[in-house]
Length: 387
Image 1: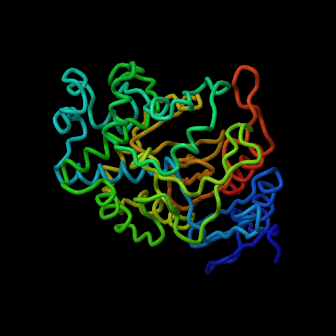
Image 2: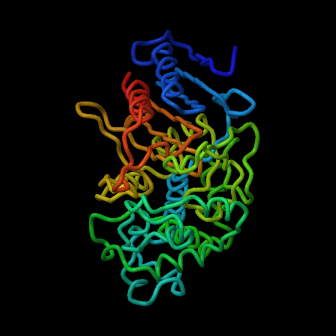
């Protein structure tokens, strides 16, 4: 089969049901490619039935096809793993969920803020701490002022190794974006870098090792890791960043040191591993049922795109009118996009990955304009989640 064809696998002991139609899923993933994504791959599960599909290329120059088994940077889905690791420490009595972060990391926040901001507030983005990213990458200004941004910092920092304490300091020094515990909160990667330092402080090991031991290995994820260098293990796709049309043609950023996000967004995984992880999480096999209940307690939070969403502790719900609720997380890295969700009863799971990001052109006010890719991805999500 050629590089542009759709490849798929159908597994399971039951006959194909109307709710998981492989031909419909094949067509939907192919439509994402036709809309403009170089390569897309996904896995959908319904009980013990599994569909895997891929369409397009992993390398636009050589024409190498994508496959559903590829490793991928999954961005902020990392936050769910980090949150689960924190809850594991709560269960072991090393962390108190509603204790002030100043109890554990007094040097990171001034006394008043350290006393006011709790571990829970970091997990659900109600700490009031600003995002450090615009200050670490000066040319990448905060949303919604996208019209004035530029991609130069991406090239300048491909191999930069950032110190998380310095990045946190940038977020702490920036003007607060809210009062501790106030809602709506504001989504901020500063929160999860602090949680990484918290894990290090209470466990005596690195955050990466703690998350690996308590979450990744506990879930039996063979193709998931928190990288310590700039490379993704094979097999993987090249990752094409468009930066709102300002990088034309889109440039490959699959080689990139992810220390600038660390335990907030650096995870590498596969669609199969993500579905396995969320299935075990919702079954109470990663954290206890009571901890999972805490993770599913939501508050309103303003996302980096300016939308108000419901957010728990590293989890947030997705609801379509008249349909069941799904829980999960999305994520982006330079050139990589991923979404993984699971139905509340744990039966239906979907994970999808694409190798192009920020394909929307900006209007004169800096707002991303609609693109056929948006509609094609939304259509795939509907088919994958609801049949």
